[in-house]
Length: 167
Image (cartoon, rainbow, N blue to C red):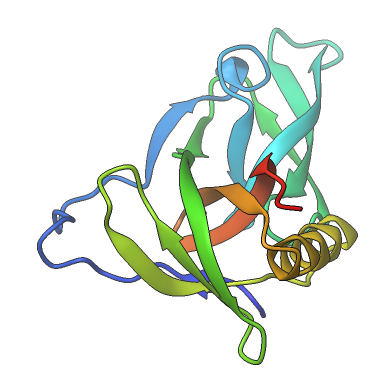
């Protein structure tokens, strides 16, 4: 897998970081749009609530897309079942450099802290497009802001914006 494990920042991260929480099944699709399915964080794309025949029990058929490889997952739960909701964090960074040989980005946050540990991702078609666009734009000396999504010990660039095109 080409996913990037998040580095443990001994000074910045508390060892008790919460990466997920539990919720009732009936809250999925209404209150929360992410769900842990088969141990993978997924974006809920379809949520159908139904009632069992000859019963008062209600169940939910959920379809989700894995955030990291866009594979489709399905599950059925009762509306009062507890489910795990992953915590997603999106942070913007200024792209300083790309090591084209190793496909590693050097990024700077708003406080001026730099990091060079996030690799370009080529798992999905969208990942390939973002990665290729970033390399091409950096070759053209464009100033770029990237958005990195952090979730369940993984991270990847999910978006970018060119803020200044040099001539």
